[in-house]
Structures are given as C-alpha cells and as structure tokens.
Image (tube, rainbow, N blue to C red; front, side, top):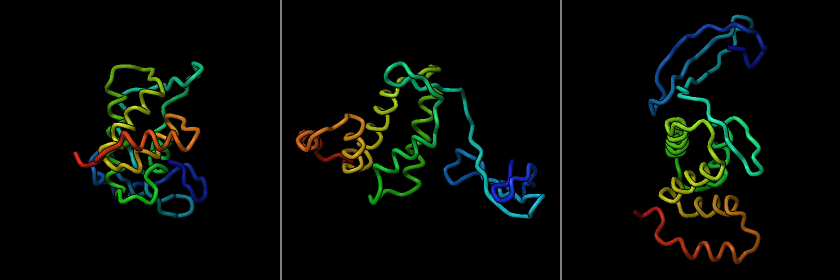
Length: 153
C-alpha cells in the first residue's frame, strides 16, 4: 500500500479490525519510509461490474461515484454516515450478486431512488431531480406532488 504522505511503496499493518457495519476491514498502517500513520479499508468485491451509460458508453462501476451522488442528495439532511454506508453497500451488493456483468446506469439510478425513498423525502426528490433530468420548476412540483409520506413506511 503506497503511503499517502511520501509515496513510499511499503507500509506495515499495525492493527486490523472489522468496520462498524461488518462489510469491510479497517487497517491502521505505518509507512516504512516516513513513519506516517494512515487507515485503509478493504471490501469484498464479488465481480467486476461495468456500467452501461446512455449512448452505449461503458465504464467500470466506481463505488466512490455512487457514494458522492448519494451524499450530495443527502447533504444537510438528518441522515447518519452509517445509514449512507448501508445504502451504498446494499446497492453495490445487489449489483455484484445480480449475475450481470453489465448494468445500465438507469438500473443503478432506480436502486438509489428506491433506497432514498425509504430514507428521506427531500434527498429522494433531490436525487430524482438529477436522475429524471428536471428542467423546470413545474417538474419539481409535479414530482413532489407524487411523494406522500415517503420515509414513513
């Protein structure tokens, strides 16, 4: 593991333990070059998933992109980091266990929408505004009108 401080190639694992949600391993490391300490996380990857975007463009699935887009929708909402982590891990697990190696971006968006719908109505509408490409205020109004008691059941 390359040191994030000096770029040295070797580091020593000082401590390993499961993460809070049990889906990854947290490792404390110390660089053998500069002595700096840092933390890494390891996750199980069941299979490589390729995302098929509009226009048939293909790119590897990146968990960090999924995390970012969900975090943006949930910004300044009463949603814990643990809830976000569970949602992202659940979506990633669904994609990796689906048996498909290529997944349309729209399918991923649908999984996010389903997850956010049960989590927070504002985050759900925020994500929908990008996913469904709202272009006018009335698009928000119409969609928000369909959202009743989201997150309550």
